Image (cartoon, rainbow, N blue to C red; front, side, top):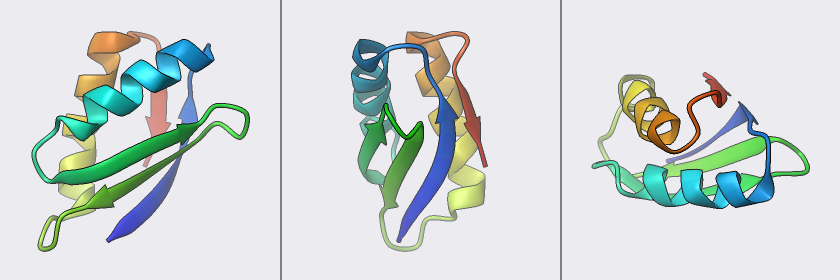
Length: 72
């Protein structure tokens, strides 16, 4: 299942680091951030509840960029 979220990130380099952090969260198949559009796309593994998984993704991203926000 693929979902899109609004993301607030300050620079393209940070966006790339956040993508990498999100990809390491168990249950996340793939993640990408379009810095210009401030949009994050996440593909979840089958059977994963995106609403339950997004707090973990946000926590992983905040380790990279502490002031980032993901609206979910």
